[in-house]
Image (cartoon, rainbow, N blue to C red; front, side):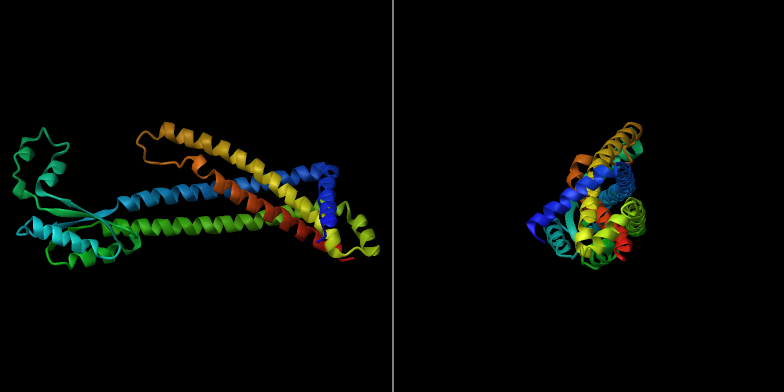
Length: 295
């Protein structure tokens, strides 16, 4: 494409936006609405994934050590556990530390405070890297010599995996449906604007203009509308997200829900909006103009 041709296409695209202001405004509003819906679903999915990730990181199991093992043997066993695939970290907890942890919140109960250290057993707190391989990791640690018992919430770990997979699948399906709906709506909105210029397009075709020469101003117009809609949607999304996150923080006294700050995701959100806006705007224009090129 020649330089002067590209300049002409941009000029024609901008002129068309100004000439058909009402339809251009409608197209931008539709892009903004579609992006806000997609963005909201995506941000909910991202926050849900982050919360599930935090829960997964906190998911650990305890491996109890043979009572006959001394500190040297415990150190050797710890080194063995660290070599097990999928083990992220291993923390040794002595009998005394286990007793202190157990007595937290029970200091006023004399029955518990008089418990001897021997009631408790040395143990390892083991965190995993991949929660999906949690059960396999537990079994490999259980098979090590010196490990006499294991406390592990395998069912909870499996529940985390199922919830994470379902949440991701729903988010992908919803976003995919919204993209298709957005393309359909934008294509029809731009088609209405293009309909008023059908005679102009027919005359250009009869004068020998190529399909590309006619199509590109409309594609540039859709591109500009997409970028404009993406930028407006981004700032609106920021405002809506900030209001909702502030409300959640104020009424979430137990801190059960953790909301990521929008600033940490701003560049990715704007990049995603910009890409989606360009694809929807330019793609919708290309679809809309196709019918009128068949003269």
